[in-house]
Structures are given as structure tokens and as C-alpha cells.
Image 1 (tube, helix red, strand yellow):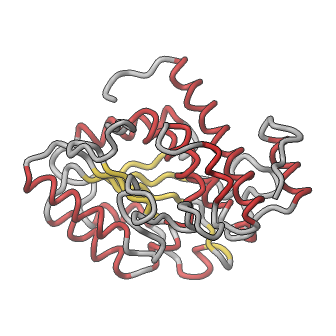
Image 2 (tube, one colour):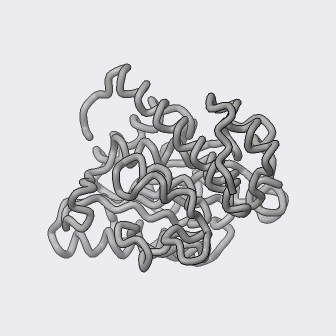
Length: 284
């Protein structure tokens, strides 16, 4: 964190993100349910956070000075679970229990099941409010930890999102970073056809956020944005990350149908082949 990444660091992030994407396909295929599209679009953002940006220690997941990540778009749980497993927070074999009866890996992230999940989310529009509270708490307690919240663009149609964002701007929370996974699609189609949110970057600016627009699949741009957020201490930062729903899998890319639709066996095989892991479909 805070150091200029080497070319090898970018290669490592790309390799990790590729493996996270493979696990998303395996998990949702075996579960027969889940949200692959938005998990794949958020993968690079989550990978950059957990493997480069955030102050974390899997051996001490409750350390008071740890940075916090709130996955406000809680349905992208497969991406977070996969990244956490690769980071050493849970056994990798457990990933294939996604959504199974008795599993700790709920369809939406659940702090009661996994204590290193910072907030139970999935009711859209709620996660950013919890992140604002965490950032304000850190300030009042005199701690230096930072709080990152990943929002879906569909949840930016919800009023509580903007009420919480307004509070973050009002209190000038320089330790808060709101990251918008702007893939442009939700369950039933495009965000702009259902309830348009553009010009969304201008909205963040109007709410007193230092706002940066990036390609959400370019690690150079993502890490530069995080560095700029750390340097901006006068208030919160918003990163509008332009992403592709289903990124990395040709037949899922840009298709709202895969928002909440898992791949069947043939689709899983094709997806894993495209992601460089042919013939690795796990048994259901």
C-alpha cells in the first residue's frame, strides 16, 4: 500500500483476478444459482483492494486498525468469497459450498456466518450507510483505518444510497471511498432504461465527493485512483469504475440475463476454457 507497483505486481494482480473469475464460474455452476455477471464485473476492483490497497492481515481479521470493505452490492458475494479464500481467510475447498444448506457462504454476504465480513448486505442501498458509519466511527475513535464500499449501479436508484452519501460528504469523511461498479446493467435490463442515474459522476461531485472516473478493469487506473483517494484528506472520494457485466466470459459480457443466472454445464465448460482452465467443471 502506498508504493509504486512494479510490472510484476500488475501481473500478479491479473493472475489473481483470473483465478477469482474461474472460482466464480465453478461456485455458481455447482450451486445452480447466484449472480455471476456482477461478480465478474467487480472482480478486478475487489482483487485490487484485497491484494494491494487495503491494510489487512488474515491472521488477525479483527485487528482494530484494519481497513474495512463493505460490499454494498452483496449479491456479488462469489467474487468476494473467492478473493478472500485466495487471500487466506477461508479454505478454498469451502467455495463449492456456496448457497448450500448449512454453508457459511450465503448468497449475499453475511457477517453472522463469516466474522471477517464487515457488514451483512444485499438489501440494496443499505451498505453505503454502514460504511459511512464505520468511517465516522474511525474518526471519532482516532483510528487511521480506511473504509471502502463497493456499490452497484442499480442500487444508485435507491434513495437511502444518496442519503448515506450525503452524510459522508457533509461530515467530510476523508477516510471513506465509495466505488461504483458501473457495468450499466441490472436484473431486467440497462440502468438507463429502467431508472437512469446519469450523469452519476456529477451527482457524486454534487454530494462533495472527490470523484475519479476509471476503467474498472485496468489495474493501473484502479491503483492510481486509490492513491489519489489516500492523498485527498479533505473529504470522501468516489471512484466511478466503468466495467463490463460478465467480464472475461464472452457469452456473459454485456448480458443482463446473467445478472442472476448461473451457467449450465456446457456454459461452465466454455467459460472455464475461455478463462484458461479447460475441463475443470467440478461435480455438483
